[in-house]
Length: 407
Image (cartoon, rainbow, N blue to C red):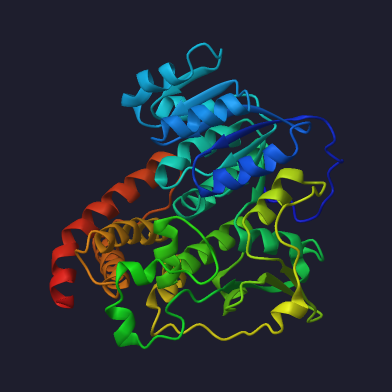
């Protein structure tokens, strides 16, 4: 049984809901807090967390009268205590405090802690059997099978907060799982959609960060430019909705208006459309099973004029093909894909490798991991984190030779 509800069959949620936001000061957290701010009568904030932004966290905790606030950096506990002095808001620091925030009695939790650090807190919320709006890719990319099985066992409800997966979630409600033929995830194509391969190879950091449609964090913007982000989304969709790689297609759609489509056996295709604003999918998760008023701009198709689509180019964006390869390999290969990409993106930001070397480092790391006989089924968070750790070590070891080849 899937932990993702494919039909809206829950009773209307009209009571005041307790809310926790893990990653409250990030871009997803900002959008979530904006929505909470608009309807204070509907929500009560239980806990908020941040990585290192103590000032931002304390400001939000006081504004929303949160019951608990936690910062991931254990060395910042004193600073957080001082910032919250006299408020009556409990606080903590370090990994255990983030997990405590996830364990507190909220009805709904936004899992927006970035990176592998978000896995254990999200699992803590899963084990409570609560409703989780999932915005952390690593939960699925690093431990998809294990994570979804554990969610189903605990009775947790997983709502996809990412725009593309939320679109699929909404469109899937038009039919039954056995009637599904395929899902289609759209991609903007990023800033290099029309660039020649040689130009993409030499792209600068400033160029990679100029996304045409979305305002996002640095890492995800670079992933969008390489289409690694779309590869991660393919992996997520596979685990979220129990789909095989052959049931997932990617379609480049520069306008970012159609976020996802589902094709059924009668060849009907259901699509979800909306302005490119993360508050729309988050509002859907926050209000589910109802719909709430969202602040995103009203979609004006007449003003937009036209919507265009094109097939992805795997030669210019090899990172997308590598995601399918990892998904078909299984046994932790998707964990390796994600870990190697994080090392590669960090190296690109530090100007240690060219943009085109990002995919080459990921491919080399995946190949080395497979040759070393390191792949095995993952049955726990510790298994996934061990693979993540070892993949990062291999990627770091391969980095100098990949950089040398590109020079």
